[in-house]
Amino acid sequence: MVAIQKLIDENGLRVDGRRLDELRPIKMEVGLLANADGSAYIEQGRNKIIVAVYGPKEAQPKHIGLHDRAVIRCRYHMAPFSTDERKSPAPSRREIEISKVIREALEPAIFSEYFPRSMVDIFIEVLQSDGGSRCAAITASSLALADAGIPLRDLVVACAVGKIEGKLAVDPSDIEDKLGEADMPVAFIPVLGKISLLQMDGMFTEEEFIEALNMAKNACMKIYELQKQTLKQRYLQIEKEIQETPVQKGEE
Ligand code: ADP
Image (cartoon, rainbow, N blue to C red):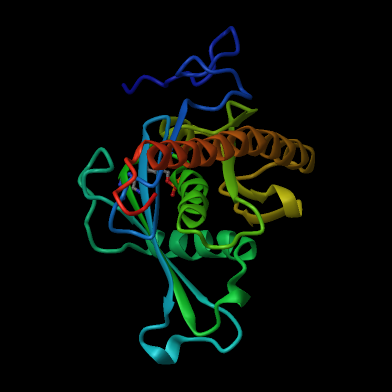
């Protein structure tokens, strides 16, 4: 007989020891790829995701260009080794759907009207996945866009809220996602106060939905602070590198 795993213990703690409103540990980095215009890396729990951004550059092929704004393209891809069983490297329906919703979550934050007839490419590679990868990918993609110097209204930040054993819990991990009753990924653009992604897998009551949305926003604001710190760190590092670069003769 298969043992049924308890997702919340008698102390109200989850499988990985977290409280219901606690995020998984998060690590972020920007500017790590030399050959992309912008890049970012995120670890959220056991998720490991890298994002590269190219552009704005001339739309290619030309006929995809728009006269009044840049075309934003996004590809979310899971590496064959990112899941417990080898995943086919070919794009699945799920990856095509996630690529679309991530693009739609990011687009309202981008001043795409500044770059008519051009395009921006966002490549997301999930190296290791652990539930909530679309949210972590959105958080990292907006950092990579900022790193590429693409004008943004604000960063976009995302986090899911799940229902496990009848209780709402932020940032569900893979096992909570799979064994839980519901999962609602939310992307938020803080400066605009706008939600740019809201999906739902499973069912919430109306009260649960309202509470889950609040929990998601609170969690997003915590991640938003980390995003801003990560960008600041990057610019402080660049400033330090410039100061430490010896001045060449003739440049004084
Ligand atoms: P998200 O990662 O945004 O939560 P899903 O809810 O669709 O997206 O997937 C939940 C988790 O299921 C993923 O993060 C991943 O760990 C796992 N998963 C998704 N697709 C596959 C696959 N083809 N093979 C094995 N595991 C998968």
